[in-house]
Length: 362
Image 1 (cartoon, rainbow, N blue to C red):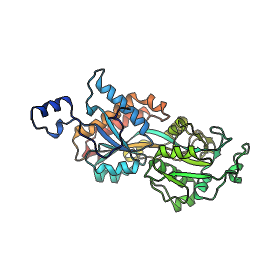
Image 2 (image 1 turned 90 degrees about the vertical axis):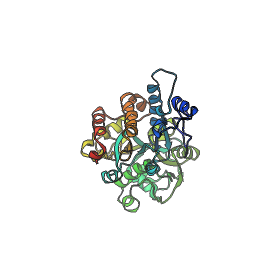
Image 3 (image 1 turned 120 degrees about the vertical axis):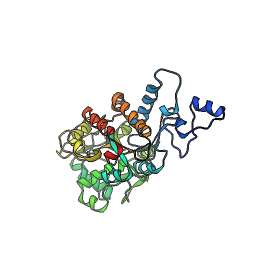
Image 4 (image 1 turned 135 degrees about the vertical axis):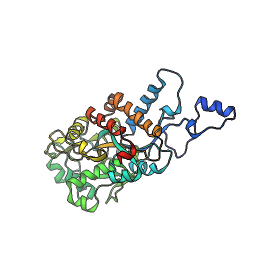
């Protein structure tokens, strides 16, 4: 991957375009506007693969078949998790945060920021269990809550056997794995557990950081996937496309209609169609545990949060430009990565939202 597109670092050297370099050679002073800089974002690991792909598309489109590439045609995105991404918005060099947890209208207004969804996806329940084929294991929300509460500790537990009567399940200890960094995927998963388990909701609730009652904590999606691969009997949660590309097995999860549904685009589209985006201020909706026979119950959206007050219009309009192109030409790439692109009516509403002056939007 192009080194400008996806780097994990704290500070980067400023890169000058050819014109700026020429000015330096002649000893002329540069104003800040003369420096070419990438669009800088940080946050969600859930949506990182598709953001990286869109960054490639953006750079290619802006080069328009030529050989010259300016840094301000690139996107520099840091995979730090939703919580850290939002925290970094206080840094003046950051142009957007990607978060799987929608920010409230009041908080956005307080800091002078916009928010809009960029892509949809699902959280798969990944397992490492011999003798179980892809999607063959059924799990319900209450069972998942009891596993992470420590009430169910063996794969041969009668409660698991009851909804998997045709499977031969081993007498193997269940080893739960969870994220220990501030993760939007954790928020989606624990929001779901809170919706199906009163005990989980009371004791732990939904958040990006949880004081887990048991299990092994790891940082980042890739480390979580490696942990699942490395130990028999493990169970974990991660963005479904990344789980599939890692060739991990996942469970089907019971939805509100009592149907066992595998993670994937069809279940996400059903959840998208079950909510009213336009009634929510700044598009802050939850796709968790929505009704419908085809709905997968652990779905979510990734949102871009963009500072506007105190920034030049050229600065935040660049972010709009990037996502406008992603919405227009990046749908197939999102689908290839097992995400679900936004519907065209929703994209149209987002583009109207961008036209509002920052003060009027707040």
